[in-house]
Picture 1 (cartoon, rainbow, N blue to C red):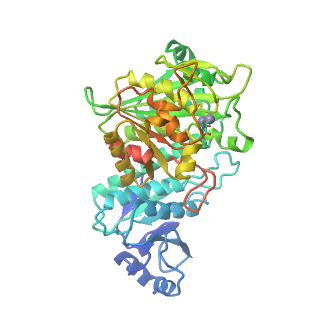
Picture 2: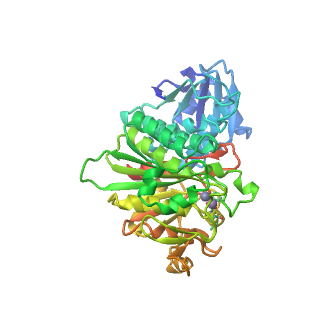
Picture 3: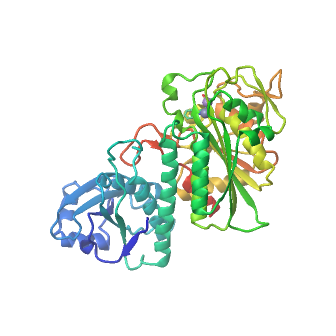
Length: 493
Ligand code: BES
Ligand code: MN
Ligand code: ZN
């Protein structure tokens, strides 16, 4: 969506909703003080009565104030002015957007708050607010027969004269692209496994590639077999849905420049296979393709933003099912790079899918790699639901990813890659087995993947926790979240 801009006083802005952020303690900003004056001091009285605290995410609605042009005013708390950060802005403006998107065809105006903090530029603020409004306006109800959330008919940003620059306007447009890309990831994750399976995921990737100017190659099961991707094929063989590998290419830097690869786990449904999951653990396993969706969303974002980089995006797509043809415990699979793998748990399937895609991408002569995968419950046990686990064979490359995450306001924590975790993967009958002990399971999985990345600098991101919210909260809808897309775009920028 295109945004509009104005430098009018807040009281004069026409819209169905005017969203204004307020910091917790301290004085009103110049613009808010002027708005308060139009409202006859109502805001100050509410503040003194303790009804307007500015606490992060607190909202207060003032409907139908005759003194202002907007039909309704939504005040949202921005928290502590001494430590403003992107995550609190995200929380505040997502909360606001979720609240005001319950009716159709509403026009929104939003004041960009003034922040005097050298760590947070006006453009970063503008970008994040635009992204948050976009993400917050779309709900998880893909299948509601009566939609209960509605995209805004228009969004107007109210800028101070100092902030009314081309840079800030460009940042808002970037933020909109990021928001739409996050929403694409969320939609793919929220759709059921009956809708999104390897073939349909690949078709969608192909459509998006055409729309946004990416090249897209779909490897079908015949090609996958020719490539001897026995590890991925083992996982896929129990399903009626054949596997696919999608390869997206974007050459924004031109020939001869370094190539970054993004590789995503796309298990469109993870039943666990014969090592069947208990029913409750399967409820959310349509989301086991979040890594692949994030790769696809990121590729569309960098193409739309025309970033001067060369990137390959690869999605390994398979469904992990039980049937008479399913792979069995004790089976030995031969991966594309020749490694033989003894399968001792068919629920450790993500690493088997990624193994072959990683080795395929290594042979495409890339300079660095990142994979994204909803790989282990262990990672969620270790870091909780909101923090991504990072694992690497190259500390400098990992540091770049970690610092991009900090800049993008996303939470990532590095976990160990000691050799003792790899020792657990030794097998008596094959080169390696696909599981070790319970302890340190996220690191064991990462050491498994490491066997397929050769010498390429590589970071593995385990997004099992943050990619999907089981429960919604005022600032975040339940379902797919689009976690790590902002970080990847920041990194590639
Ligand atoms: N897709 C799951 C991991 C997962 C768990 C993602 C919870 C999101 C939420 C993965 O394929 C899996 O089943 N991993 C096993 C590995 C184990 C068998 C070594 C796990 O984590 O239990
Ligand atoms: Mn599994
Ligand atoms: Zn899985």
